[in-house]
Amino acid sequence: MKQSEGILQRLNRPWVLGLSGVLGVFVIWQFIAASGAVDDLFLPSPISVLSAGSEKAYSGLLFKDAMASIGRVLGGYALSMLVSLPLGIAMGTNRTINQLLEPLLGLIRYMPAPAFIPLLIIYFGLGELPKVLLIFIGTLFFNTLMIMDSVRFVPAELIEAARTLGGKGLPILTKVVAPFIAPQVIDAYRINMAAAWNLVIVAELVAANEGLGKRISLAQRFLKTDEIFAYLIVIGLIGLLIDLSFRVLLRRSCRWSI
Amino acid sequence: MNLSLTNVCKSFGRGSSAKLVLDNINFQVNSGEFVALVGSSGSGKSTVMRLIAGLDTPSSGSILMDGVPVKGPGPDRGMVFQRYSLYPWMTTADNVGFGMRLKGMAKPEVQERTNYFLNVVGLAYAADKLPKELSGGMQQRVAIARALAADPKVLLLDEPLGALDLQIRESMQEFLYQLWSRTGLTALLITHDLEEALLMAQRVHILASNPGRIVRTVEADLDRSNLSHLRVSPEFLSLREDLAQCLRGLSQELVTSS
Image (cartoon, rainbow over all chains, first blue to last red; front, side, top):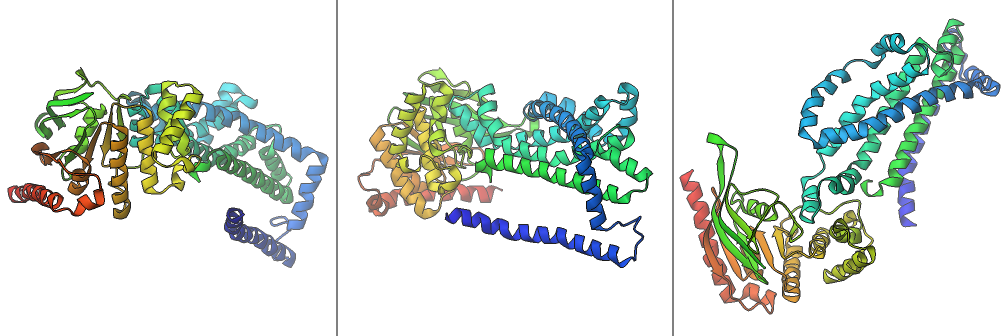
């Protein structure tokens, strides 16, 4: 009982403040829009943005576009998580693999992922594959390097203790290294998810038939700024939800680290 | 059981930059003995421990366990580290059972032995707690139980009380000594604290620094039926003073030679 009160108290203030910040912006926004100081075309009021958004939601278009974008993100990012985990662990544990790959990854990491879009389109056309691959290559190297670092900083005592207890190679990896890095891996996935979410929108702005990014570029063509705002808010909300679910996963699965 | 070190030398680095840290270390630990190595920092005492544990290899000389050369770490030499080496995601019971699980021992047996050793260190009530919920002294008792549960022939104590407050240190010294006298285990203790070594060990080796070498060996044949009495007994104090002078002489030597 006492502990739950403690958590509530700790969560209470940041939540209230955070929400007030968001609401504050909406109030100021509404005030400026209502004052008529800025043209409606440039700054639609929150209310017209809301109605534009709900219109899209009722027609089912919003859900369909959101699903298309989320699907691409999940596909590309799942692939990135799957590949970066063994790669990061290998680079963190094996010196040869590390020396072979770290400079390469360090180099590729600084190549902006969106710059690969033209190449991907030339290679794979305009379908789903280039978008999924863009998310994959745009997040793989960050995930891998962060996982590699977490492996490198496993305290030597933990590994040596296991060795003096009779542990060797693989059991140490699965029973000591893996559980120790788990919270950091989940956190790396959470942080880099933001990049995946950015990239899907970029990919859709360039070429897509559906998706939230595609809708924004269409809305731009017809000067429907209220729709652009509505989609931006939806994109933000979905991102926030994904972030929160990673946080919940971390809390649930790695209680010891919090 | 017999652990013997013969002409053990260890240097780090190669060629002209090589630094000799251990010079001709010779000593033995026989079954049921409690032996201590005392030295200041830089005496290479932790290196001795790592060599015996098999976490490092000597540059020359031999380390034999029952006549067999030490090759790498193994559960016959249980180690308790200075810094907390418990697995933070495991409960007390899981930490204690870790070595047994690594050996592939059956679950009921692991549980039974875990309970037994938790009782030995007086922590049965904390079986389900995580390390972060335990005090420093309790954590070290768990680490000792974990090492004992793997059924080692010799227990290597690498400054196990070095990170504890003075008060807890004293009660932990009593605890360690009682543990040794009750269970008849064989123990090698490394410490910089002369009093600690003399309280518990029947034989104390004094290590000089740069390079680490044994300069004096004392058979501390004392009445240990009551450690708090022993601490203030004239016999104990004069022996301690005698050895303290030896250690002071060594550090004096170091100051004038440098």
